Image (tube, rainbow, N blue to C red; front, side):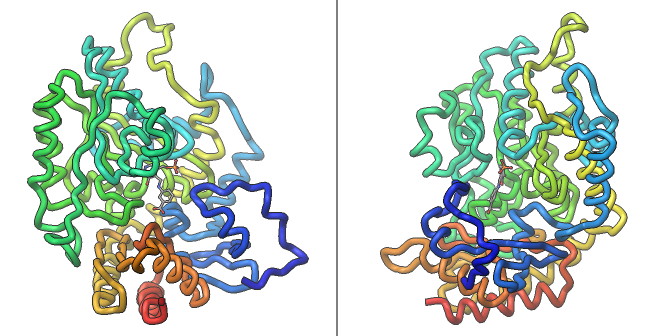
Length: 442
Ligand code: PXG
């Protein structure tokens, strides 16, 4: 890109996360500003933010309500511990999140990211069984292709092969994995939930038979898999997982880091699918991405099981310096306030059929191998170039920037999850531009 050398920072020191660092530093794209659904890049170009940041800014950028709440909080109380003392914002936000959650899930533990929140949920699951005298229940069941962040718990339960290949030695010893639910032969181009694949949940019964229920603490799944490319659960699948977990006393954890706070047109995916887990992991959209915050919403009986022993003893030996950071909580309260006041979750739901119709109209565009969607999220698989996996999607990403779209790609899959404040015209325009990009992509 054309760089304005007067303002170009030295790019060498920042070791970028999940990025081809050398490639980026030879072809940098710097984001200078964000307003509404758009970013402004270093060269003055404006691009539509197709993935709401990294799934985290559904209200759009530069929200004055959030900026004001953060400013006010920084001026009043920039930090206070939540170990041994507390401050009102953390309690208020926890109570508000509990009101948004399915009935019964009303105890909120705060972390700072999705990864920390996942690790927290797994630890709570194990502590819960121990507290009930069931100390053998230490095994965690995850799923192939799952992304649960980069903590030790998350890479153990996760099913991203590269993570496991590199860091497998650190992974928790007692884990196993369900098969993922994607089968192009049976579900290519399905809209919303595929009607094939409910039987894949039976794999959980087989894992129970193999390991014995008495060794299994929890099953953790993303109700809709996001980062691996919007893999939507087959109709009936989550219901079946719920039944099997309940029957065997296994906790069911939904990792809703992507689906939480409206992405599927409901507060949580749990409500959209009508399946209530025992814990929900959240992060990202809770603060509209403005301040890092994540956490776990636990069913009250999980919390209560740990509330035993002498009252002056710590019940759960876990927490972060910044659990319930006042500035993050202020941003969270402002975010939920705006979502409610502007009816943005209903708006996401209203936009869903439009996005669905538009993205599926790309079915006949060059290189398109599959399209999946649910809520305000969709993925488009491109046929990889021979001997160059990922190259085609990267080319689409670069052409997207030239054409006014900031796309997200992983492998040869493009993902979009526009902000809830997008207009219908913007959703149409995004897909129309994508069509021109696919026509040009080599
Ligand atoms: N769980 C899920 C389901 C996630 O999607 C995490 C945990 C980890 O969250 P933190 O805050 O520790 O990053 C995630 C993160 C993408 C993309 O492009 C997805 C994520 C992160 C970055 C990019 O799909 N998900």
